[in-house]
Image (cartoon, rainbow, N blue to C red; front, top):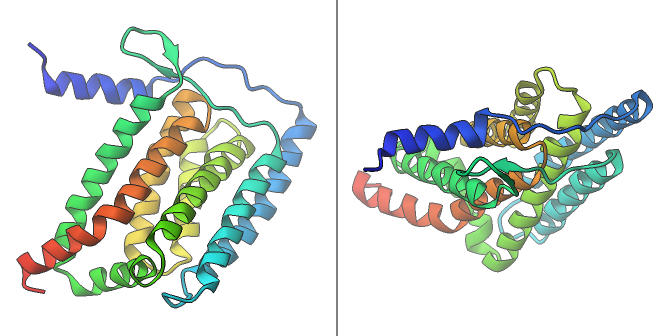
Length: 245
């Protein structure tokens, strides 16, 4: 008989805690270059992100700003040096691309946030900023917003769990990249986005440490972000009817 607690423990152990062996050594010169590119990219990206999140819903400048942001993250990441896809542990003990594993993590993270959103909907000062952010999808083109969300998710992971993670070195890389990612997210001035940045940054940072690459973090990020885009409005509307909002 399958024990769900044991299954969940083994899954989390393999996906977030037990690193895969790899050799990603690079010269001191390349490492220093990676650091310079990472810092410049971070400053530019933080400024553009703060600007984009303050654009009124329905304003076409939002699309251009978010695409520009994706371009900054991606160009900075690819320009910093070599990136790796990474491999994860399978149930049989072999190594493979962490696809199903990352999809599962993304779904778990999505379920946790939707449950939290249901509760938050009853707290107006927390719910209102989230509703304002979702107005970009309601007022504008949902397919376009979804495409931009996907592009930005990929670009963020290429930079934060790719370039930046490699630039800070092995020691405390998860903690440092999570803190930086959370701080950049805080530039938007939305409290719940800061919490999202902390959770997503930590989970994808642990994935990066375990797999040694960006594929797992990208899949988890996209599963979470696109799921939130399509399911969060319905969750908030249902919660509002329950809470009498």
